[in-house]
Image (cartoon, rainbow, N blue to C red):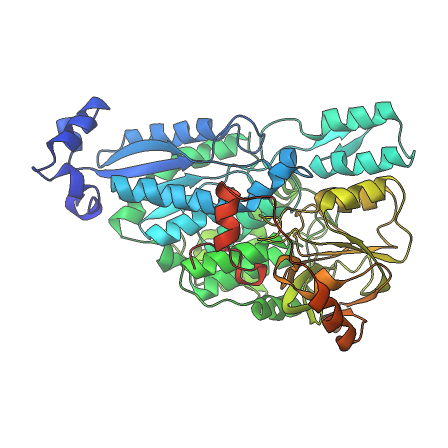
Length: 562
């Protein structure tokens, strides 16, 4: 049995010609009896500069303690990087957020492969952590599982529930005199009460819920709050599941299949998840050698009803799913019973998705307004729209809840950076009926494709969400809402048509026909193209320079291992 599950680590532990390697192992406390055991790496995205990640080391230690007592397993704790989206939002540091996904994947692949660990338990927190570890686990393709760090508790001020987006939007509200300086300060102080990832159906919770539905986490991992006893118990139970995965040689590519990926996307859409799921799923599918394209998201979105009344477009948070619904498994069971999800897919429990949830209670629609029935949904089809047109010949991504309408036509107000746009919004330079254009913030142009949460939050705070639209070759936070279109490809940096828009040009966004159009004659566009001067990035060295030289387009998932 031991020989079977230590097939990677034995390349070091059972070779007589590696005395220095063995000396190193003795130095870290390995005993003679441990040399024939399988080795498991516990990788956390721990760092204490971010609430999403501050507690991950503690969770990792709980996992390590549970595994250390197993007769057939050795365990080693590893850390990798993370970037706080909330802390860096609206600053130059935000350019590192999406690129950190690649560093996370590369670093995990490097340590696990070089040290020949037999299995992996990954414990991610913030947004890019989850797809980063998932990409690495698929590249490694050895028995692995994910434990989500969990969601933050809600804040409270003046009997109003708060989260991180409340802080962003409060700035816009203060700017127009809607709230006082004291109210503004109190909202900021009470928005984030402790450890855990941002509470709404933003990117971290979107991806966590999707990974649970794909089968890469234990049931309820996505909905157990970060500081709950349930999360600690989940960590304590991980030992038996990783051992079972090793014993039966169940690998990520056995779990992540075209069908399970479709399950994950469907679940995320049904809950009104972040548009970031598109670039992350494209990258994950690439690592799994599964074909996935933008058009697939449009097809799925057109067939899936939105049933989650969750922030940012709705009212509730992930903690409410845990407290009032009974956790994510209740929703998964409901969607399987409705024929939306396929329950036959294998999961890290060694059982099928349906077997994981079949014995839990059915959802009750009479005592809650968090999850709606599919025959009376919040929206009859998905909020994600893939728009094409002369402004996005390779595609763009819109998040249309329906509250902001389905059609917008207005005159362009053009900005070559997010900072320029933020200043204009805060100084009341935006007129109702305008389409704000923020360009040169794509994967290469940013570089790093920063999120535009600040401008969308300022628009919401200023009460303009129903009267203006925003388009960009950058991307949006899972916390963004309003009439917004991102991921415009080709991006401005490479001479996409977004680079040739001028102030006053008419732009049409039609989410019913899935089009994004610059209403300028083609011959005029070509004239502008001839006199256009390519953008010269200020980034000429370092990681971002390497990233901009290797990253694929947003329509291809912003991957660097092409």
